[in-house]
Amino acid sequence: MTKPTHLSTKEQINLGSFYTADFLVNEVYIMLKKHIDSKNYVLLDSSCGSGNFLHAEAILKSGFAKDSFSKIIGADIDKMALHIAKRTLDSKVILLHKNALHNVARENFATTQTDRLIIVGNPPYNDRTSIVQNHLKNKDSIQIDSALQHRDMGISFLRSYERLKADFICVLHPLSYLIKRTNFSALKDFVKAYKLIGSTIISSQIFCKDSKGYFPIIIALYKRDSRGMDYDYICNFNFKTIDGKEFSLNDFDYISSYIDKYPNKKRVEKSQVKAMFYTMRDINALRRSKTFINKENSNTIFVTKEKYSLYCYVDVFKLFLPHIPYYFGNCDVMIDFQQFKALESHFIMASESKILSPKILQYFRDLLGVHYGYCEKV
Ligand SMILES: C[S@@+](CC[C@H](N)C(=O)[O-])C[C@H]1O[C@@H](n2cnc3c(N)ncnc32)[C@H](O)[C@@H]1O
Image 1 (cartoon, protein in one colour):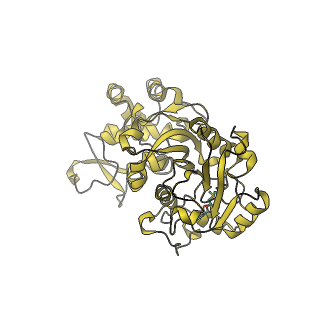
Image 2 (cartoon, rainbow, N blue to C red):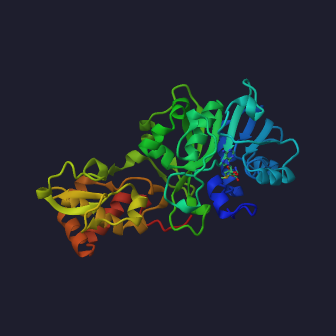
Image 3 (spheres, helix red, strand yellow):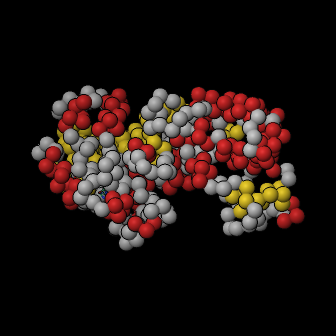
């Protein structure tokens, strides 16, 4: 979680080189151990960095026997990281200097078609097109097999695991890959061939202590499954967090069922406009963005009289963000529509005055239940 000393900040961002702490590596092996009963698996980390996932101690600590894996393989595009890995890892570990997203086939990873394969690791998740840290991003992209190409390298990596036909995959990646419908679809063949069977959610703050924005990361265990999984499976999945909380997306109703989240100017007549609101993407975006706005721009949502109270609801919801835990960061704003209707005028008043009545405070306690009042720790 400290910056690799051999890389500049720019190189670190472009390679997504945020190495994984031992306690998280341990979580991965503990999760795997619960599901893997036999030996003779080949273990691969195709973006191994300096090899945190491949140390014998890391593997043994979680209860795997010394000879649990018939072969241990690490690959990385960063030669210097591999030098460090070579100095510190057991000499039996096979290290490959390669771009893991190009010419993806088992024979290029020292693995045969009949090997039973487990992939572990923490692949880079760098959205090359996002504006965050844009000035540090390398616009000349590396070569990526056409079936794997996506603007976010992490999605390309997940697709590469499907190409390698791993039997189990246990890796860290942004939770948004699963819970945002467009990302889920972008995983393509991966979701047709794998089922999520284990989860531990952590905050990205673990990797970047000083970062102002943070997002949920999942340690996800996938098993190859001919039926794969659909988005409904994810909505019903019981996610677990590192601090012992549990939730499923279907535990809540969301604001998107009731209002427009994106510009709707083409559909709303100007004469119907009571107010204007800023585009809302998810809870994390709401932390940073405005709510009601006075000046129209390309991100403006027109608010009609009928929907005004619901936008006031979002405005009031924003005041409660400090009580909403990191693991809901990529979810939509939640709502209990019936309770909201009972308190509709309170929400309008609270939004206009920024004074919160005891009834509104109680509403949010009830809405969030065990998740309410969580303080921002990781
Ligand atoms: C988040 S770090 C993880 C390193 C290590 N697995 C760990 O958890 O400590 C991501 C690693 O991906 C490597 N990487 C980035 N792009 C790659 C590519 N196309 N092929 C192989 N490795 C790549 C980086 O060099 C970096 O070491």
